[in-house]
Each structure stands twice: as structure tokens, then as C-alpha cells.
Length: 255
Image (cartoon, rainbow, N blue to C red; front, side):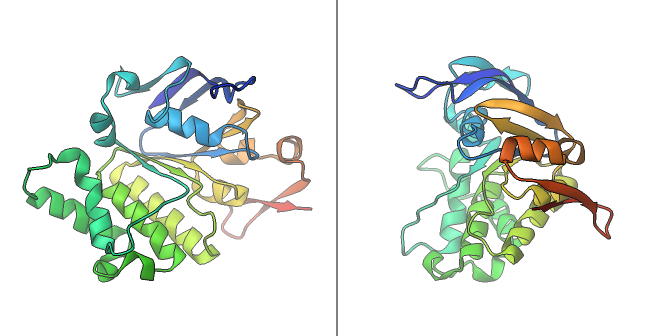
């Protein structure tokens, strides 16, 4: 999947939210998007999923422009986990996750064994099988975030995008979510595009990273090569030093 020379501007805005942005998401890899608030990360994800249409440029999936796909066709291949969610108070975990099968079903169509397998698999993979009958509002923040991931996985997508999925989560739940994504990426060839604010999580989990600033890509490549102290200071305005963890991962210390 890729986006080439994407331009996007909000109605009435003087400046481009995205200006000549090109990205490629290799199949089966995790691509992270980083940058300050307002740099265009969420706008880029909305363009890549087809939620918004770029003013210029083209998003291509499976060799075809995404603009030629219907919303249903897109949802059968591409899933998006957004930052904010609302759910009817009385819905259970399983009822929410079942909504992930909507792109594959017509209103009058009976529930199929394939639908059930997809839902149960999504619940199992996200560790929610034992909570399937629980009310959504009775869950912790980390469990609620896993519900939306499970809904997306019930779509059986080839590509999944996540917009800051670790925001407001305790570190335990942040790592659990990222580890789940990494396992799915490696075991099922799932292509992941994710916005993260924690640069050390990008270094630990991502295969490649795009750094955005003021609507443009200012650096791209392997995380350890991109997230160098000079770039961190130039883009994020903080000083940093690179160290090696005992697991031989690069990590940043900020000061």
C-alpha cells in the first residue's frame, strides 16, 4: 500500500495539512508515523484509509487507486482504529466486536460460521474471550482499547491503521497492545500503520518510521537510523542521547 504526492487542505485553511507527502507500507511490516501535534499524522491516516480524499496525489492498494473502491470494499481490506470511541452503554464486548463483520453482510443476511469464527478469533487474539459477555462500560481503559482492536481484527483486514492507540493507557496496556500487533504482523502478515508519540516504542516495535513536520515528511527509514538525536532536537525541540538496551535495542534518553 502506498500514497504518492499527497496534498490535503481543510476547507477555508490557508496552509496545506499535507504537502507532497509520499509513503509506502510494506506488506507484513509495522510502519510508524511520528511528529509533533499538528504535523499531519492523523490527516495522513485518514487519506490512506480513504476516509478523506486528498486534493492531489493518489493512494494505491493492490495496484488500484483507493478512490475507485467503495466504502464497503475498503472496509473488507483496510481497518482503522481511531483515537476516540463511543459505544452504547448496554452493548457487550461481543456485540461491539460483531460489528466488525458489517462490511461482509447485508441487512437481511444470516450470521454465518465464517462470521462467528472471525469474531471468536478476534476476541481470543486480543485476550477478550473471557470478557465477551461483559458490558463495555464495565471495562478498564486498556480493555476498552482492546475491544476496538478486536472489532478491527474481526474485519479480517490485510492492513490496519491505528491513530495513537496507546494514548491514556497505562504502560502495561501500551506494551500488551503493541506486542499483540507485532505478533499478528509476524504470524499473519498483517500490515500495520500506527501513529505513536513514544519514540522508544517506535524503536522497539516498528520496522520503519516516517517523521512528519508541518505537513511534510522530513525523514523516513529504519527507526534507529531516523530517530537520531539531531532529528529529535530539530523536530521535537528536546535534546536526546542514544543508548543500547541489554536486549540490543536502540533507545533514547531525553534531557
